[in-house]
Image (cartoon, rainbow, N blue to C red; front, side, top):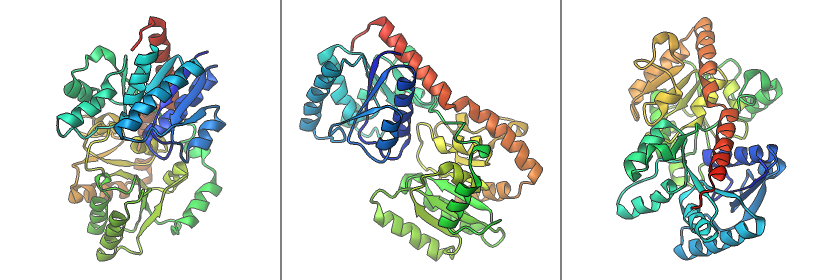
Length: 387
């Protein structure tokens, strides 16, 4: 692809949209194109640049209407100067600026609907609608595609389901050196041989950490384990303090670790006996469950959003096809039961489940995501459509 692609995203910190932006920039460069990313930057900026992407620093995280209007002019100037062929927006505030810039310049505009955005009220609905205004709209799951159609009346033929990609070479047990695993075990102070329940998610209410702590407390006397809640609080100090207080009051202080952001998720999963997604609100995709399955780790997820696409479990799948468990959101008793079940599997049962899980995770590969997105870029450009 000998084209210049501009992605627009507020920041390059942690998160699925940010990870996808970096992965797509690398794919564009690998196929002979030029990858620009308009953003305020962040911890993933260095990786993006190492892969050949170029960061253009603009204040695109701002929701101030005057700043957004100014950003539209800045983006239009950037599009003209760098001869951008296509713009791909990944978040709402910068998407409005990008849409206006594309209308000023006649460059195609596409979006990825990365989140299940709060839709309370007509104003919020209008604000969200920009993510459905692309020439093509990428949904990162069939669940998200249905949300787009229901909320915005977008025709199904304008929506492409392209699953968020997981780097299966990186999330491969064979590819994770023992030294990395041991370094993380020591950093987190995890006793050898003790089962690890792992949750990797932002430290925020809707990710469901309180439910997971309550579930762990329910079988703490009958099972040996350490619970790791890894994630960035991103300034939510009151919520983090509340989690620590809940842990203490449940008598789990010696059995729960809250280590902050995790830079090495493959090594964390190599330490895990079971991986948990405890979210109490629907996510658009939820990559952690796929990463766990790619590593052959039993996954327990809440039965929300696209979890029926990402984790196979009865009644939709037979017991012989199971790759994990789905439980009602916020139901600590059901989560405790699933955890008890997962931690009671025999070695043979774990091996069988891991084989099925790795096979299922191959549907959500990074290669498939980049290939399908690049093909969509080419298709839009070949049609010569302007926004």
